[in-house]
Length: 478
Image 1 (tube, rainbow, N blue to C red):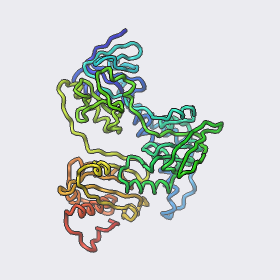
Image 2 (tube, rainbow, N blue to C red):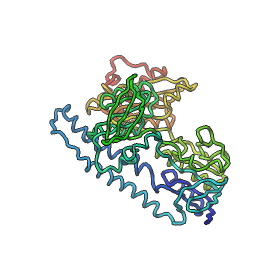
Image 3 (cartoon, rainbow, N blue to C red):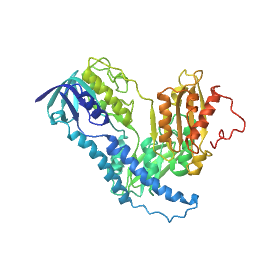
Image 4 (cartoon, rainbow, N blue to C red):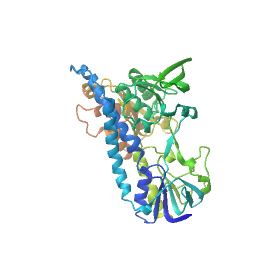
Protein backbone atom coordinates (compact mmCIF):
# COMPACT_ATOMS: atom_id res chain seq x y z
CA UNK A 1 0.00 0.00 0.00
CA UNK A 2 1.25 3.43 -0.91
CA UNK A 3 1.24 6.06 1.85
CA UNK A 4 1.21 9.80 1.16
CA UNK A 5 1.87 12.29 3.96
CA UNK A 6 0.87 15.88 3.16
CA UNK A 7 0.18 19.16 4.89
CA UNK A 8 -3.14 19.74 3.10
CA UNK A 9 -5.41 17.28 1.28
CA UNK A 10 -8.33 18.61 -0.77
CA UNK A 11 -11.20 16.29 -1.70
CA UNK A 12 -12.74 17.48 -4.98
CA UNK A 13 -11.46 19.52 -7.91
CA UNK A 14 -14.46 21.65 -8.78
CA UNK A 15 -14.71 25.41 -8.31
CA UNK A 16 -14.24 25.28 -4.52
CA UNK A 17 -11.52 22.64 -4.61
CA UNK A 18 -9.51 24.34 -7.35
CA UNK A 19 -9.68 27.67 -5.53
CA UNK A 20 -8.74 26.03 -2.23
CA UNK A 21 -5.73 24.43 -3.93
CA UNK A 22 -4.52 27.71 -5.37
CA UNK A 23 -4.78 29.52 -2.02
CA UNK A 24 -3.42 26.67 0.13
CA UNK A 25 -0.42 26.43 -2.17
CA UNK A 26 0.57 29.92 -1.03
CA UNK A 27 1.25 28.34 2.38
CA UNK A 28 2.73 24.98 1.44
CA UNK A 29 3.78 22.97 -1.60
CA UNK A 30 3.17 19.67 0.17
CA UNK A 31 -0.47 19.23 -0.77
CA UNK A 32 -2.73 16.87 -2.68
CA UNK A 33 -6.01 17.19 -4.61
CA UNK A 34 -8.09 13.99 -4.75
CA UNK A 35 -10.72 13.69 -7.51
CA UNK A 36 -12.84 10.75 -8.68
CA UNK A 37 -15.08 12.21 -11.40
CA UNK A 38 -13.47 14.90 -13.51
CA UNK A 39 -11.25 17.90 -13.06
CA UNK A 40 -13.06 21.17 -13.52
CA UNK A 41 -16.25 22.89 -12.56
CA UNK A 42 -19.87 21.78 -12.76
CA UNK A 43 -20.57 25.29 -14.05
CA UNK A 44 -18.40 24.93 -17.14
CA UNK A 45 -19.33 21.32 -17.95
CA UNK A 46 -23.03 20.89 -17.28
CA UNK A 47 -24.23 23.99 -15.44
CA UNK A 48 -24.01 27.73 -15.91
CA UNK A 49 -22.24 27.96 -19.26
CA UNK A 50 -23.89 25.25 -21.42
CA UNK A 51 -27.33 26.16 -20.07
CA UNK A 52 -26.78 29.81 -21.01
CA UNK A 53 -25.70 28.73 -24.49
CA UNK A 54 -28.97 26.81 -24.90
CA UNK A 55 -30.92 29.78 -23.50
CA UNK A 56 -29.16 32.16 -25.91
CA UNK A 57 -30.31 30.10 -28.91
CA UNK A 58 -33.84 29.98 -27.51
CA UNK A 59 -33.91 33.76 -26.99
CA UNK A 60 -32.94 34.41 -30.61
CA UNK A 61 -35.75 32.20 -31.86
CA UNK A 62 -38.20 33.80 -29.44
CA UNK A 63 -37.19 37.32 -30.55
CA UNK A 64 -37.89 36.38 -34.16
CA UNK A 65 -41.38 35.28 -33.12
CA UNK A 66 -41.91 38.56 -31.23
CA UNK A 67 -40.85 40.79 -34.13
CA UNK A 68 -44.44 41.34 -35.24
CA UNK A 69 -45.24 43.47 -32.18
CA UNK A 70 -42.72 46.02 -33.48
CA UNK A 71 -44.30 46.05 -36.95
CA UNK A 72 -41.58 43.91 -38.48
CA UNK A 73 -42.53 40.95 -40.66
CA UNK A 74 -40.16 38.02 -40.31
CA UNK A 75 -40.63 34.71 -42.04
CA UNK A 76 -41.10 31.85 -39.60
CA UNK A 77 -37.85 30.54 -38.18
CA UNK A 78 -36.63 26.99 -38.53
CA UNK A 79 -34.75 25.44 -35.63
CA UNK A 80 -31.99 23.03 -36.63
CA UNK A 81 -31.56 21.07 -33.41
CA UNK A 82 -28.29 19.50 -34.52
CA UNK A 83 -26.73 22.91 -35.20
CA UNK A 84 -28.07 24.32 -31.94
CA UNK A 85 -26.49 21.51 -29.93
CA UNK A 86 -23.28 21.59 -31.98
CA UNK A 87 -22.71 25.21 -30.91
CA UNK A 88 -23.68 24.49 -27.31
CA UNK A 89 -21.17 21.62 -27.09
CA UNK A 90 -18.40 23.40 -28.99
CA UNK A 91 -18.54 26.50 -26.80
CA UNK A 92 -18.98 24.36 -23.67
CA UNK A 93 -15.87 22.37 -24.57
CA UNK A 94 -13.99 25.63 -25.02
CA UNK A 95 -14.87 26.77 -21.50
CA UNK A 96 -14.02 23.35 -20.06
CA UNK A 97 -10.72 23.41 -21.93
CA UNK A 98 -9.60 26.52 -20.06
CA UNK A 99 -10.26 24.77 -16.75
CA UNK A 100 -8.48 21.59 -17.80
CA UNK A 101 -5.47 23.59 -18.95
CA UNK A 102 -5.21 25.09 -15.47
CA UNK A 103 -5.23 21.63 -13.87
CA UNK A 104 -2.72 20.32 -16.42
CA UNK A 105 -0.28 22.93 -15.11
CA UNK A 106 -0.42 21.49 -11.59
CA UNK A 107 2.52 19.26 -10.64
CA UNK A 108 1.69 15.57 -11.08
CA UNK A 109 2.47 14.88 -7.41
CA UNK A 110 -0.33 17.28 -6.44
CA UNK A 111 -3.02 15.15 -8.13
CA UNK A 112 -4.48 11.80 -7.11
CA UNK A 113 -7.31 10.03 -8.92
CA UNK A 114 -9.85 8.02 -6.93
CA UNK A 115 -12.60 8.14 -4.31
CA UNK A 116 -11.57 9.17 -0.81
CA UNK A 117 -13.06 8.00 2.47
CA UNK A 118 -12.12 8.88 6.02
CA UNK A 119 -10.56 6.03 8.01
CA UNK A 120 -9.43 8.24 10.89
CA UNK A 121 -9.37 11.89 12.04
CA UNK A 122 -6.51 12.78 9.68
CA UNK A 123 -6.48 9.76 7.40
CA UNK A 124 -8.07 9.02 4.06
CA UNK A 125 -8.17 5.83 2.06
CA UNK A 126 -8.31 6.39 -1.69
CA UNK A 127 -9.44 3.52 -3.90
CA UNK A 128 -6.50 2.14 -5.72
CA UNK A 129 -4.80 1.45 -2.40
CA UNK A 130 -3.38 4.85 -1.44
CA UNK A 131 -3.48 5.90 2.22
CA UNK A 132 -3.30 9.67 2.68
CA UNK A 133 -2.25 11.13 6.02
CA UNK A 134 -3.01 14.86 6.03
CA UNK A 135 -2.45 17.46 8.72
CA UNK A 136 -5.44 19.43 7.37
CA UNK A 137 -8.23 18.40 5.00
CA UNK A 138 -10.55 20.50 2.84
CA UNK A 139 -13.81 18.80 1.84
CA UNK A 140 -15.04 20.13 -1.52
CA UNK A 141 -16.68 16.95 -2.78
CA UNK A 142 -19.67 18.59 -4.49
CA UNK A 143 -23.16 17.19 -5.05
CA UNK A 144 -25.03 14.70 -7.23
CA UNK A 145 -28.57 14.66 -8.64
CA UNK A 146 -31.33 13.52 -6.27
CA UNK A 147 -33.53 11.16 -8.30
CA UNK A 148 -36.46 9.03 -7.09
CA UNK A 149 -35.27 5.41 -7.16
CA UNK A 150 -38.16 4.00 -9.28
CA UNK A 151 -37.25 6.33 -12.12
CA UNK A 152 -33.98 4.51 -12.75
CA UNK A 153 -36.08 1.86 -14.52
CA UNK A 154 -36.47 4.38 -17.37
CA UNK A 155 -32.89 3.67 -18.39
CA UNK A 156 -31.54 6.04 -21.03
CA UNK A 157 -34.88 7.86 -21.17
CA UNK A 158 -34.21 9.25 -17.70
CA UNK A 159 -32.10 12.39 -17.98
CA UNK A 160 -30.36 14.83 -15.66
CA UNK A 161 -29.12 18.22 -16.81
CA UNK A 162 -25.69 16.71 -17.57
CA UNK A 163 -27.31 14.56 -20.27
CA UNK A 164 -29.01 17.50 -21.99
CA UNK A 165 -25.66 18.95 -22.98
CA UNK A 166 -24.55 15.67 -24.55
CA UNK A 167 -27.46 15.67 -27.03
CA UNK A 168 -26.63 15.66 -30.73
CA UNK A 169 -30.03 17.17 -31.50
CA UNK A 170 -33.22 18.22 -29.74
CA UNK A 171 -35.95 15.75 -28.73
CA UNK A 172 -39.52 15.99 -29.98
CA UNK A 173 -40.91 16.14 -26.44
CA UNK A 174 -39.82 16.05 -22.80
CA UNK A 175 -41.31 15.93 -19.32
CA UNK A 176 -39.39 18.11 -16.87
CA UNK A 177 -39.98 17.38 -13.18
CA UNK A 178 -38.97 20.21 -10.87
CA UNK A 179 -39.61 23.96 -10.99
CA UNK A 180 -36.29 24.93 -9.45
CA UNK A 181 -33.62 26.87 -11.33
CA UNK A 182 -32.61 24.01 -13.65
CA UNK A 183 -36.18 22.98 -14.43
CA UNK A 184 -37.31 26.53 -15.21
CA UNK A 185 -34.34 27.47 -17.37
CA UNK A 186 -34.21 24.28 -19.43
CA UNK A 187 -38.01 24.01 -19.82
CA UNK A 188 -38.38 27.49 -21.20
CA UNK A 189 -35.33 27.20 -23.45
CA UNK A 190 -36.44 23.90 -24.98
CA UNK A 191 -40.00 25.12 -25.42
CA UNK A 192 -38.77 28.20 -27.27
CA UNK A 193 -36.73 25.93 -29.53
CA UNK A 194 -39.84 24.00 -30.54
CA UNK A 195 -39.71 21.05 -28.15
CA UNK A 196 -43.04 19.98 -26.62
CA UNK A 197 -42.44 20.50 -22.90
CA UNK A 198 -44.54 19.73 -19.83
CA UNK A 199 -43.12 21.14 -16.59
CA UNK A 200 -44.18 19.55 -13.29
CA UNK A 201 -43.83 21.23 -9.90
CA UNK A 202 -45.06 20.94 -6.34
CA UNK A 203 -46.76 23.57 -4.21
CA UNK A 204 -46.85 26.27 -6.91
CA UNK A 205 -43.23 27.11 -6.04
CA UNK A 206 -41.00 28.71 -8.67
CA UNK A 207 -37.22 28.76 -8.38
CA UNK A 208 -35.64 30.28 -5.26
CA UNK A 209 -38.40 32.90 -4.85
CA UNK A 210 -39.63 33.35 -1.27
CA UNK A 211 -41.78 36.49 -1.66
CA UNK A 212 -45.37 35.31 -2.28
CA UNK A 213 -46.15 38.33 -4.48
CA UNK A 214 -43.16 37.63 -6.73
CA UNK A 215 -43.98 33.92 -6.80
CA UNK A 216 -47.58 34.65 -7.86
CA UNK A 217 -46.27 36.86 -10.66
CA UNK A 218 -43.85 34.15 -11.78
CA UNK A 219 -46.67 31.60 -11.83
CA UNK A 220 -48.78 33.89 -14.03
CA UNK A 221 -45.90 34.57 -16.42
CA UNK A 222 -44.71 30.98 -16.82
CA UNK A 223 -48.18 29.49 -17.12
CA UNK A 224 -48.93 31.95 -19.93
CA UNK A 225 -46.03 30.57 -21.97
CA UNK A 226 -45.36 27.00 -20.82
CA UNK A 227 -47.43 23.90 -20.21
CA UNK A 228 -47.00 23.90 -16.42
CA UNK A 229 -48.55 21.70 -13.75
CA UNK A 230 -47.23 23.77 -10.85
CA UNK A 231 -48.87 21.75 -8.08
CA UNK A 232 -48.94 18.15 -9.23
CA UNK A 233 -47.87 14.75 -7.94
CA UNK A 234 -46.04 12.50 -10.38
CA UNK A 235 -47.50 9.10 -9.46
CA UNK A 236 -45.38 7.05 -11.83
CA UNK A 237 -43.05 7.23 -14.82
CA UNK A 238 -42.93 4.13 -17.04
CA UNK A 239 -40.74 3.28 -19.99
CA UNK A 240 -42.63 2.53 -23.20
CA UNK A 241 -41.54 1.53 -26.69
CA UNK A 242 -41.79 5.16 -27.80
CA UNK A 243 -40.52 6.90 -24.68
CA UNK A 244 -41.93 7.61 -21.22
CA UNK A 245 -45.49 7.50 -19.91
CA UNK A 246 -46.07 9.88 -17.00
CA UNK A 247 -49.07 9.41 -14.72
CA UNK A 248 -49.74 12.40 -12.49
CA UNK A 249 -52.42 13.84 -10.23
CA UNK A 250 -53.50 17.46 -10.48
CA UNK A 251 -56.48 19.22 -8.87
CA UNK A 252 -57.92 15.89 -7.73
CA UNK A 253 -57.75 14.33 -11.19
CA UNK A 254 -55.32 11.67 -12.41
CA UNK A 255 -53.91 12.25 -15.91
CA UNK A 256 -51.54 10.49 -18.29
CA UNK A 257 -49.15 11.98 -20.85
CA UNK A 258 -46.38 10.54 -23.01
CA UNK A 259 -42.99 12.02 -23.89
CA UNK A 260 -39.76 11.02 -25.57
CA UNK A 261 -37.86 11.34 -22.28
CA UNK A 262 -38.03 12.63 -18.71
CA UNK A 263 -35.65 15.18 -17.17
CA UNK A 264 -35.28 14.90 -13.40
CA UNK A 265 -34.69 18.44 -12.15
CA UNK A 266 -35.54 17.33 -8.64
CA UNK A 267 -32.60 18.89 -6.84
CA UNK A 268 -29.15 17.72 -5.79
CA UNK A 269 -27.78 16.04 -2.69
CA UNK A 270 -24.45 16.45 -0.97
CA UNK A 271 -21.71 13.88 -1.57
CA UNK A 272 -20.76 14.16 2.09
CA UNK A 273 -22.54 10.88 2.83
CA UNK A 274 -20.00 9.02 0.67
CA UNK A 275 -16.98 10.15 2.71
CA UNK A 276 -17.50 8.18 5.96
CA UNK A 277 -17.06 11.45 7.84
CA UNK A 278 -17.90 9.93 11.22
CA UNK A 279 -14.47 8.26 11.16
CA UNK A 280 -13.02 11.77 11.37
CA UNK A 281 -14.62 12.13 14.81
CA UNK A 282 -17.20 14.60 13.54
CA UNK A 283 -20.77 14.79 14.87
CA UNK A 284 -23.41 14.85 12.13
CA UNK A 285 -26.94 16.23 12.41
CA UNK A 286 -30.11 14.49 11.23
CA UNK A 287 -29.37 15.59 7.66
CA UNK A 288 -25.87 14.14 7.81
CA UNK A 289 -24.20 17.55 7.96
CA UNK A 290 -21.47 18.63 10.41
CA UNK A 291 -21.49 21.92 12.30
CA UNK A 292 -19.18 24.43 10.59
CA UNK A 293 -18.38 28.13 10.67
CA UNK A 294 -19.37 29.86 7.42
CA UNK A 295 -16.91 32.69 8.07
CA UNK A 296 -13.92 30.32 8.38
CA UNK A 297 -15.05 27.08 6.70
CA UNK A 298 -13.85 25.14 9.76
CA UNK A 299 -15.75 22.05 10.90
CA UNK A 300 -16.17 22.15 14.69
CA UNK A 301 -12.71 22.92 16.14
CA UNK A 302 -10.92 20.37 13.97
CA UNK A 303 -8.31 20.72 11.19
CA UNK A 304 -11.15 20.03 8.74
CA UNK A 305 -12.68 22.57 6.40
CA UNK A 306 -15.67 22.48 4.06
CA UNK A 307 -16.23 24.43 0.84
CA UNK A 308 -18.64 24.61 -2.07
CA UNK A 309 -22.05 23.07 -2.61
CA UNK A 310 -21.16 19.93 -0.62
CA UNK A 311 -22.30 21.97 2.42
CA UNK A 312 -25.61 22.95 0.78
CA UNK A 313 -24.98 26.46 2.14
CA UNK A 314 -23.88 28.29 -1.02
CA UNK A 315 -24.72 26.31 -4.21
CA UNK A 316 -23.48 29.03 -6.58
CA UNK A 317 -20.18 29.29 -8.43
CA UNK A 318 -19.10 32.66 -7.03
CA UNK A 319 -19.99 31.53 -3.52
CA UNK A 320 -18.12 28.23 -4.02
CA UNK A 321 -15.04 30.19 -5.11
CA UNK A 322 -15.29 32.32 -1.96
CA UNK A 323 -15.73 29.16 0.12
CA UNK A 324 -12.63 27.67 -1.47
CA UNK A 325 -10.62 30.82 -0.85
CA UNK A 326 -11.60 30.89 2.83
CA UNK A 327 -11.14 27.15 3.43
CA UNK A 328 -7.88 26.94 1.49
CA UNK A 329 -6.37 29.89 3.32
CA UNK A 330 -7.33 28.59 6.76
CA UNK A 331 -6.24 25.05 5.97
CA UNK A 332 -2.90 26.42 4.83
CA UNK A 333 -2.39 28.64 7.89
CA UNK A 334 -3.90 26.33 10.54
CA UNK A 335 -3.87 26.60 13.58
CA UNK A 336 -4.16 30.30 12.74
CA UNK A 337 -7.79 30.80 11.65
CA UNK A 338 -9.13 33.98 10.06
CA UNK A 339 -12.82 34.82 9.72
CA UNK A 340 -13.75 36.33 6.38
CA UNK A 341 -16.98 38.32 5.94
CA UNK A 342 -19.33 36.93 3.30
CA UNK A 343 -20.42 38.97 0.30
CA UNK A 344 -24.02 40.12 0.02
CA UNK A 345 -26.19 37.23 -1.24
CA UNK A 346 -27.05 37.37 -4.94
CA UNK A 347 -28.91 34.75 -6.99
CA UNK A 348 -30.06 35.00 -10.62
CA UNK A 349 -32.26 32.68 -12.68
CA UNK A 350 -31.80 33.14 -16.44
CA UNK A 351 -35.39 32.67 -17.51
CA UNK A 352 -37.24 35.34 -19.49
CA UNK A 353 -38.09 37.43 -17.60
CA UNK A 354 -35.20 36.80 -15.27
CA UNK A 355 -35.46 36.19 -11.53
CA UNK A 356 -33.12 37.75 -8.97
CA UNK A 357 -32.82 37.57 -5.18
CA UNK A 358 -30.60 40.04 -3.37
CA UNK A 359 -29.57 40.36 0.26
CA UNK A 360 -32.12 39.26 2.83
CA UNK A 361 -34.87 37.04 1.44
CA UNK A 362 -38.47 38.02 2.15
CA UNK A 363 -39.14 34.77 4.02
CA UNK A 364 -36.12 35.29 6.28
CA UNK A 365 -37.22 38.83 7.12
CA UNK A 366 -40.81 37.76 7.62
CA UNK A 367 -39.74 35.05 10.08
CA UNK A 368 -37.30 37.31 11.96
CA UNK A 369 -37.68 40.04 14.56
CA UNK A 370 -36.58 42.67 12.04
CA UNK A 371 -39.12 45.44 11.50
CA UNK A 372 -39.14 46.12 7.77
CA UNK A 373 -41.19 47.77 5.05
CA UNK A 374 -41.71 46.92 1.37
CA UNK A 375 -41.79 48.99 -1.80
CA UNK A 376 -42.58 47.63 -5.24
CA UNK A 377 -42.92 48.44 -8.91
CA UNK A 378 -44.61 46.62 -11.78
CA UNK A 379 -42.69 46.59 -15.05
CA UNK A 380 -45.92 46.43 -17.04
CA UNK A 381 -46.02 50.22 -17.45
CA UNK A 382 -42.33 50.97 -16.81
CA UNK A 383 -41.14 53.22 -19.63
CA UNK A 384 -38.01 51.57 -20.97
CA UNK A 385 -39.45 48.08 -20.42
CA UNK A 386 -42.44 48.92 -22.63
CA UNK A 387 -40.17 50.42 -25.29
CA UNK A 388 -38.26 47.16 -25.69
CA UNK A 389 -41.31 44.94 -25.26
CA UNK A 390 -40.02 43.37 -22.02
CA UNK A 391 -42.69 44.79 -19.73
CA UNK A 392 -43.45 41.82 -17.50
CA UNK A 393 -42.76 41.28 -13.84
CA UNK A 394 -42.50 42.92 -10.44
CA UNK A 395 -39.68 44.17 -8.21
CA UNK A 396 -40.11 44.24 -4.43
CA UNK A 397 -37.52 45.99 -2.21
CA UNK A 398 -37.11 45.75 1.57
CA UNK A 399 -35.83 48.33 4.05
CA UNK A 400 -35.33 48.41 7.81
CA UNK A 401 -37.70 50.51 9.89
CA UNK A 402 -35.96 53.13 12.01
CA UNK A 403 -32.61 53.09 10.18
CA UNK A 404 -33.77 53.20 6.57
CA UNK A 405 -31.05 50.65 5.65
CA UNK A 406 -31.68 48.74 2.45
CA UNK A 407 -32.01 45.04 3.30
CA UNK A 408 -32.69 43.21 0.05
CA UNK A 409 -35.01 42.55 -2.88
CA UNK A 410 -36.72 39.87 -4.91
CA UNK A 411 -37.87 40.28 -8.49
CA UNK A 412 -38.95 38.73 -11.72
CA UNK A 413 -38.51 41.15 -14.58
CA UNK A 414 -36.31 42.53 -17.35
CA UNK A 415 -32.54 42.84 -16.85
CA UNK A 416 -32.72 41.22 -13.40
CA UNK A 417 -29.12 40.02 -13.76
CA UNK A 418 -28.01 43.67 -13.92
CA UNK A 419 -30.46 45.19 -11.45
CA UNK A 420 -29.53 42.43 -9.03
CA UNK A 421 -25.89 43.49 -9.09
CA UNK A 422 -26.71 47.14 -8.39
CA UNK A 423 -28.96 46.17 -5.50
CA UNK A 424 -26.49 43.64 -4.06
CA UNK A 425 -23.78 46.30 -4.03
CA UNK A 426 -26.15 48.51 -2.06
CA UNK A 427 -26.69 45.73 0.47
CA UNK A 428 -22.94 45.07 0.65
CA UNK A 429 -22.21 48.71 1.51
CA UNK A 430 -25.21 49.01 3.84
CA UNK A 431 -26.63 51.99 2.00
CA UNK A 432 -29.84 53.56 3.19
CA UNK A 433 -32.76 53.78 0.82
CA UNK A 434 -32.30 57.55 0.71
CA UNK A 435 -28.63 57.19 -0.27
CA UNK A 436 -29.69 54.93 -3.12
CA UNK A 437 -32.28 57.46 -4.26
CA UNK A 438 -29.64 60.21 -4.15
CA UNK A 439 -27.62 58.26 -6.74
CA UNK A 440 -27.98 59.05 -10.47
CA UNK A 441 -30.72 57.47 -12.60
CA UNK A 442 -30.54 58.06 -16.34
CA UNK A 443 -33.63 58.37 -18.53
CA UNK A 444 -35.07 56.26 -20.09
CA UNK A 445 -33.65 53.10 -18.49
CA UNK A 446 -35.07 50.10 -16.67
CA UNK A 447 -33.26 51.23 -13.51
CA UNK A 448 -35.86 53.97 -13.18
CA UNK A 449 -38.21 51.22 -12.11
CA UNK A 450 -35.86 50.57 -9.19
CA UNK A 451 -36.19 54.24 -8.24
CA UNK A 452 -39.99 53.98 -8.28
CA UNK A 453 -39.86 50.99 -5.92
CA UNK A 454 -37.34 52.72 -3.64
CA UNK A 455 -39.48 55.84 -3.44
CA UNK A 456 -42.45 53.79 -2.35
CA UNK A 457 -40.26 51.99 0.17
CA UNK A 458 -39.02 55.28 1.60
CA UNK A 459 -42.60 56.44 2.05
CA UNK A 460 -43.42 53.19 3.85
CA UNK A 461 -40.36 53.77 6.06
CA UNK A 462 -41.60 57.34 6.66
CA UNK A 463 -38.32 58.71 5.41
CA UNK A 464 -37.32 61.11 2.66
CA UNK A 465 -39.24 64.05 1.22
CA UNK A 466 -43.00 64.05 0.86
CA UNK A 467 -43.81 63.17 -2.78
CA UNK A 468 -44.94 66.08 -4.95
CA UNK A 469 -48.36 65.74 -6.60
CA UNK A 470 -48.07 65.53 -10.36
CA UNK A 471 -44.31 64.89 -10.32
CA UNK A 472 -43.45 63.94 -13.89
CA UNK A 473 -40.87 61.30 -13.02
CA UNK A 474 -42.62 59.75 -10.03
CA UNK A 475 -45.23 57.62 -11.78
CA UNK A 476 -45.21 54.01 -12.87
CA UNK A 477 -43.63 54.89 -16.21
CA UNK A 478 -40.52 56.30 -14.53
